[in-house]
Image 1: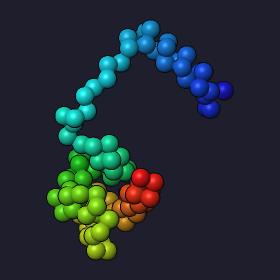
Image 2: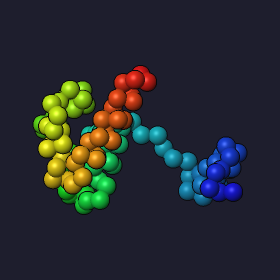
Image 3: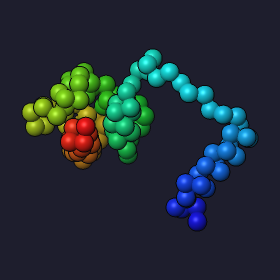
Image 4: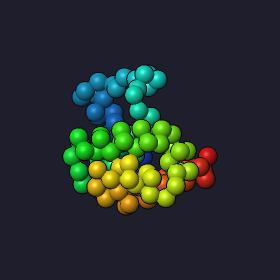
Length: 107
């Protein structure tokens, strides 16, 4: 059943892909422009909109609230207004805040 693969099946698929395409090279992530959390939030902002529009929403958010802590501590509506150009601002910001709170709670 491929909809719920076992660890063994995943390992075999990985091995087959490596044999076919070569082993993936690990990248040094220190030079990346965005963090993993940035990328996750950019993905949320990209829902139901164009790449250009979601990029503009993310840039507005980071300009208005440069850190994720700033996003959590922002007055009601500030973060939503920053991403409004991307559409579904209230829904998207609610999800982003839930993720941020979950990370704070767990780590």
